[in-house]
Length: 294
Image (cartoon, rainbow, N blue to C red; front, side, top):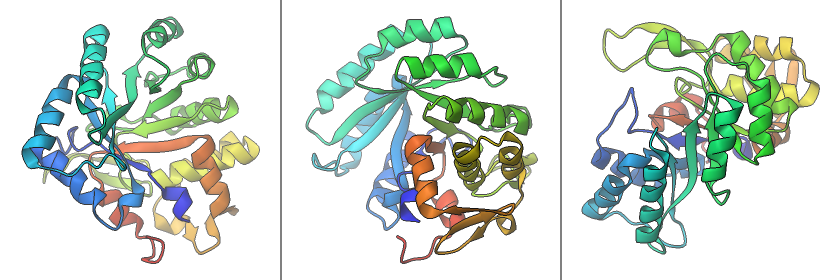
């Protein structure tokens, strides 16, 4: 069970809807690194343009960044790639051996041509995550991401309903990624374990909408790796609430299919690497794993 959820949640507290200040975000990440659920914690996500601010906040807060257990950071690149790569390199040089390392970069691409151009500029020493367009088509772009040895990134929601892909779109992405052996991360609107209708932001009168669940996404990914059955994978993505997913010591049962924990762990290794969430506690607490797992 533990391997199916290890390092699953990349902490994106700087981004909406939480949109924390840098000091609050680094304190939260540091607190969770020290807590009992840190085994589910992935990278700290920050815009490349704010890396210097990140370093200043870590120093100002006096946070522990041991060399043997460094903070792993993923930098989200914007439109000024050469300048932002310079910022990344400067940050890496300043923090080398000091317990903070940028080991991943994320970049949004709109075409195969743009991907190939950008991939030549970003050193393959980084884990490179290329975000695919919301509307697809996914096949050619995902294939190109695989050819350059990178990872895909899919946006699964946002702070307004129009930012959520239709189930058919998300299924098409998963089919492309699993079918071509391209690992991926997801981001936005995925901080609940199970699909349901939730508030889209933390504002009291926020719009409500249907959000995907990260358990749905993991199980659908495992199903596609097992059989390539897109129709059932989409049905799993659309299954609502924890009652649709029977969980026990052996695995998860959904829509008449049983997925052992080791198969779900393999789906993490082969395909679904992590997802970005502006909250760490919300997905972890709602998942509610038994204490002995942690």
